Amino acid sequence: MNRVEISQFSRVHDVLADTQWMLVVKSCDQLERRQRMLESRSEDRIGRIKPRPTAEGLLVRGTLRDGKFCTTDSHPFREPRHIHRVDEGRYLFTEMNRLLLLDESGSVERTFTHPYFAFLHTVHCSQDRRRALVVSSGFDAVFEIDLETGEETFRWFAWDHGFN
Image (cartoon, rainbow, N blue to C red; front, top):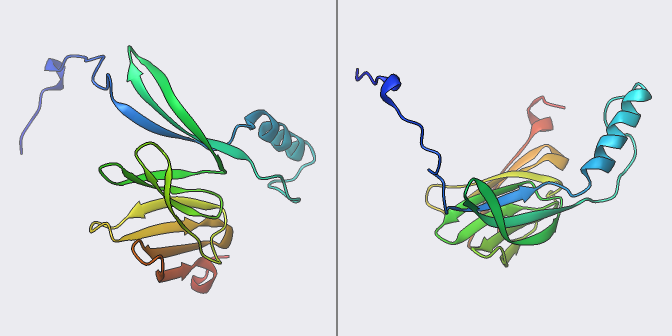
């Protein structure tokens, strides 16, 4: 076993300097969401019992410079949740009910839809970059999608496996 003496490490402040980032902003109405949450707690209930409007979120591109995030541009999306790098210059991105393939500028190259896509959350690409595994939290399900054909290749519903 190799031992590393961490007391010999030195702090580096600019390790991420001039790196480019894509940030997912879940929604732009956090004050309203927080107010609804506080109201529900004062009424002694947990969770939502009535529909709420779809929130607008953002995909923000930028660079870290001098310890600050400098925004390059941003694109609005309906309730975005996750972004995953497929390969150089291509990303999978989950929106409310669509899986999107984006280019490096954040523009949509391709849209994937499915009858059971609702409140999409996490997405991950297979090692061979041919398939995506996407969580549809609105249906408590996971789907594998072929990125070339757009077809479903696997599905798993929580309620079919004892989770309700």
